[in-house]
Image 1 (cartoon, rainbow, N blue to C red):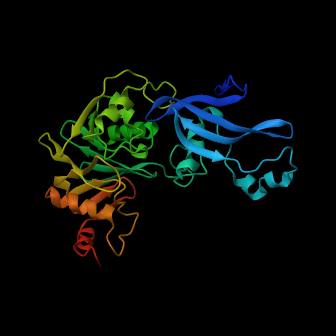
Image 2 (cartoon, rainbow, N blue to C red):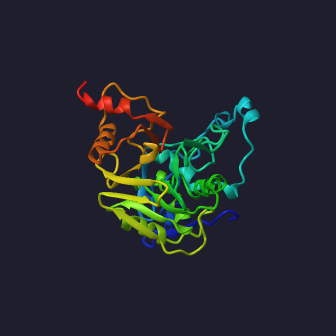
Image 3 (cartoon, one colour):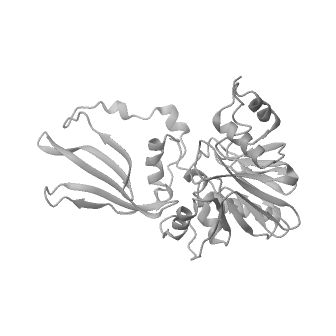
Length: 346
């Protein structure tokens, strides 16, 4: 095939296809096996058809479908497949098949993030301005314009980045824009709030350029495996060999090179185990992902457990934020959230 190969594995007992495999990249797991596993073969109209079809990623089931009814050569009105003329006129040109992340397009419906786009994580048509840097304080910029954000903090001689979302393409963009804004200062640390793929898929690019990956205690082994797994099939994945540097945070972590201090703090929360909340003291700016999406989600009438975990973390470490920026959304004032937490039963 022009854009890849299908490997068909047969069941020696029945002679029927047992699985159809494609080799493709997975941002965290690297070069991977994507298998369509076929079973429960039944005869329909003289041919056999698999009534159970399971999708697997490296042996782990990511979808499991059971066909309840099937017919052989059923008549179907061709008009059902006709593309409406008004849509055809305005539709963008078909993307080059070599640049379409097929497995991600297939996985979106499975994880509930279907987009009418060939982009990896967000619909570029819905975000025509694309990614952009938004200043949050002197020397502090938030990556916005897509669906997932990062925070860049300038130190005296280097940069600290919070979260590496979407994939290596967005990480490359972030590094390029950071260089334009902050000069040749390298990213010395990339702090990952939690392990979920949509906020960590781009970590390879930072690690390959020498950044130390900062994670909460308990996540080190996972990211050590991620960063040592071969990734030769990813179009945007770094190709240079590197030895990952990982710091696990038991309670709190901070760096201070004379210009300013930046910290990360382990907090209890209902979203993900081993979670870090970021804070830039001189800017009085916190960083949180998924627990609160300031600027996007209005505060509810009654505080929720994720929001309460943010307030509890602030109190535990005696932080003094005026604002929080988010891995989703933009930025929001902290005082209204703190006030909401004063009356949790309201």
